[in-house]
Length: 202
Image (cartoon, rainbow, N blue to C red; front, top):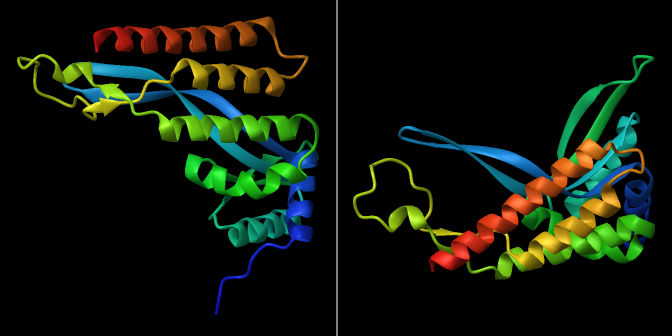
């Protein structure tokens, strides 16, 4: 028997929940990786679709529709409200899963959520097409032993960082502090510098 497919009604319902109680977008995270004598921190960009609600029935129904679309979402308890009500969310973060989820939903979304969803899809498509550059850690045959990472790395290019910047602008609430805005700008500037530095090596 074939797996059940999400109906137009279910797609519309899920899009409505995302519009009202969901989050779609990108964020900049700090990753850690280690090699002998080094503790390296680097910035990475994560995509995510998330729905948060205090009604577990809504969370379960959203997860059921997501599975029909073709992804396996993650459900967890986020904490509690001030009056003690449990808060749950259902989410997916892997780029492949985010793309599978958003493609049939984007036309059902409204307002900035729709714009953000399309930008996330554009970012994912650009990442898929990004061929990467040789890892400079392998350029020196006398390099000390230890983890060097993959032989090809994929720094975020100008197109991708422009998409991320536009998406973050749409995500940022009006009340966000100037400190938060400046920190995000600095992160993206560092990524741009890294891309240009690596491009000059090859």
